[in-house]
Length: 162
Image (cartoon, rainbow, N blue to C red; front, side, top):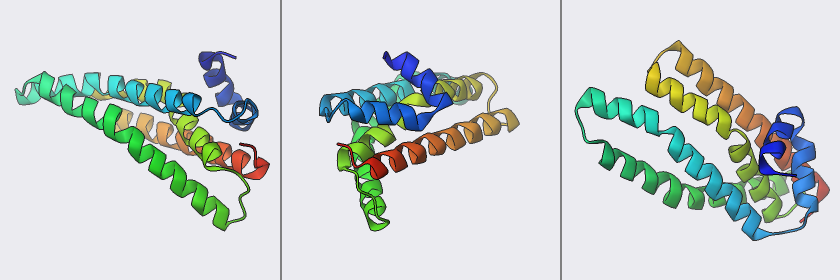
C-alpha cells in the first residue's frame, strides 16, 4: 500500500497499519525513510511560523530556516532513534516481546502519519499566530501522535515480530 493510503488508514486503525508494516519484514531502509520523510515534513511545517517570526522581529529568514533545517533533518532523526530505543527498553521492562526495529517503526510511523496535523499546525502558527486556535491544533496533534505511537508500540511489543 502507498504511504498516503497507509497514513489515511492509520487514522482508522493504527494497530493494523503498524502490524502490516512489521509483517513486511525488518527493513532498516524503510525505517530510515519514514523518519527522514517525517523530519523533512516537520521542517516544512515550520516555514510559515519562521516567516512570521522573521517578519515581526525584523530578522533575516534564512538563518532561522537554516537552524530549523539543522535541528529537524540532522539532529532530530538521531534523537528519535534514541527515543525509540528507550521506549523498547521500557516496554521490555513491562514484558514486551518486540524488537528495537518494531519500536523504531512505531515511533517513526506515528510521526509520519501525524504530519498532516503538523502541517496544519504550522499554517495556524504562521497565519493566525499564538492563541486558542494554535493551542487546539497543537493539542490535537499531540493526542493523535500519542495514540498512534502507543498503539503501534503495543502492537510491535505484543507481536514480537521483527
